Image (cartoon, rainbow, N blue to C red):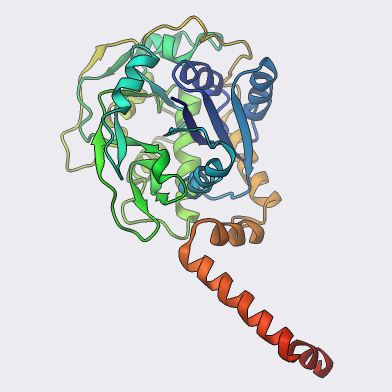
Length: 353
């Protein structure tokens, strides 16, 4: 069985190496869409590839938070490029497969029925005081952070797509939901393999992640109602605190991360470390040296370099690649151009100009 991962990343230098090394214990290859990273993310990925690790990095040019589009296109591309792949885990850079070993994951994937996809439950890990006071870039986040919420409050899942659905589905924000291209739902099958989630890891990372992600959410022209609600609320709270948060507040943010206001807020956590794998080491020193001001400067540079938000060529590419309406529209335009050429209408119009 061949199992791959697909992820879209931006400015994840403090965790990307741990993500790759840990998840390759379970996966055969990871396809990584880099979304205009300005920190050391690409440099670290290049070093990992040079080691011979099974990763492939693609580029995305959209400055807005269009992760679901990038992964949908990547999944279709995998259909043509990696024909031996049987399953694709759709992951973020802060998500780590939590099963005891690869064989247990393979056994779990057998639960996915015909015409459906698998869902794996989040287990959200939080930084306790010692984690924040003893930051060491040479220690993987998965080894440093060993406590998780007792209960999620609002249980979210990430998707695992079988080969039968490659190129036939589109993803929705967060890769929590998969639907066919015509919008109809696919059956879901719950897997027992947990997905360890490390959304908050330090003060700098927290503030930059929430503030900049909230700006991206605001600029996204096709946001769904309630999409990334937790970013909006946390960003407002951080701004009220004048961009300064204590270690206790960081832990509270982690406990409440992605929990809806209508759900019971988690308050307790427990010790539950991930399995330790000898191959998960940090050689390239993820850091948190970049201040919020530095990250914001990089963010503005990214906007300036890439046509502010939506490069024209990417919008057209997306229409061709996975929007049915866009494909039909392109086909109609092509037919019209053919008819015009046959009857000489194009030449007449050019002469009239």
